[in-house]
Length: 375
Image (cartoon, one colour):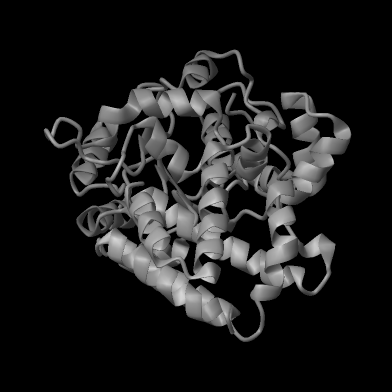
């Protein structure tokens, strides 16, 4: 686990990182950017492990030295993790270390996961996950400790776009004057939401989508998927290995979102106001992060249905169920209403983030769909 050989595809990215270490030009702060499921976190972990390994080879960490043995269990004393959390009501869980057992468990299960998987792991329910101000003091304290192995100390920040403003400003000071032999690895899916001053202190590294052939090969070798099925799933995943895993595990959340989307479109078309109100209440009971994920799913479905009208199969990325529904539904998403629907979905997402009453947001959106679907 957590070696370059375990990272799916991304040959060019691996080569660049290995070369940096071999040539002795390790930047003190790097920002790994890319969409979900490209393997940013596994790459950062493999890179930090490679730097920690005293017996590294030309292509990877040795896998057998004391450092690598600790890495296998994610208990290396010089590696520190920072990630979004939800404070517990009793104030017992306020910093990342309070959740480190959950974090290790999820990473050891698979380093390919998204924010919603992490929130399920920690039973976040309604809370919105952020990296709290208190975390900056923890980072400072840890970096002031002497390196136990005499090498680099690494701070791996997953989703720095979730940094609380106070925490971000203190992190900036550390990036401006880093302690000696300190490595900051920031892994972001929305770099535009990070403080510009932090962006300017980091070396940006854009991670592309994973090649379809690499996704298919990993599905066959690691998960025993049949070659023909793996090619279909790899195309559907569109370079996102998390999505590929969700497809083979028949993700319950996606099934729920699909049913809710179909239900809304049918109720809006039939103008069943009472049922639409009940639908809004069902979605309002799901929790904020899940509601945001649902709205993102709706945006994807609207986009896919609009593209379906152009009869270019290779540009569509839908499951069999989604395709069967969309074959009949896609004519209702057209040039006259597609921008209006997307605008309403974006506005709903903003309102959910601002903690506006979810029942009102979703009922309002469903009512607007009555008008938009008739255009």
